[in-house]
Image 1 (cartoon, rainbow, N blue to C red):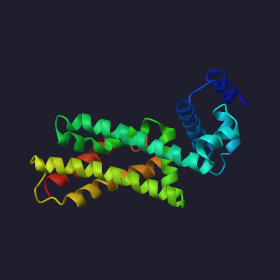
Image 2 (cartoon, rainbow, N blue to C red):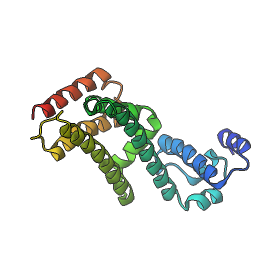
Image 3 (cartoon, rainbow, N blue to C red):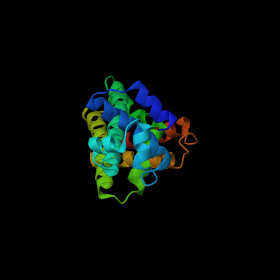
Image 4 (spheres, helix red, strand yellow):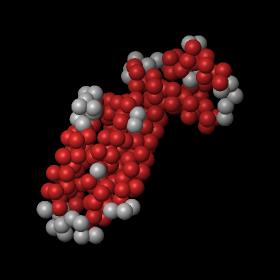
Length: 210
């Protein structure tokens, strides 16, 4: 057992099943982020959590099921962070939530580099149908969030009544997806706050004058 696994084992010798699963997910995320799905062995994943491989299989059944559980958790955590940021702005003015939407998206991703890179690598590169399905669900959640903001702003007269909501939502998402590719290339930092603010401003101006 390596030092990390030994330390985890000594700190958590007796854990409830759900607590153990949460620990395995957190430690496995780090292994998958560092090595990728194919290179990460079940032995290494087990050692990172201070458990044996049979216990790993007992909780998740296979490496693939563990990987999918990790990705699902990352997607949920990302959306929870983004929804929280958006809701805080929309509570006072839905236009504020649209004004800062791309920046909030970037910040939600930057909150945990391991999370965003692992999720992006999986959704952008994998041919696994289960990963593709998860990516589609993640993108649909993003679309629903943006559509709801645009719709709310239109109902309050902050955006033109002529605006086609589906086009506005997908157009906004196209900029946000562009951020994904920049994150994958490790240039989130170069795609800086000032640039994102200006892109967001110009896009929102286009929506308001549509």
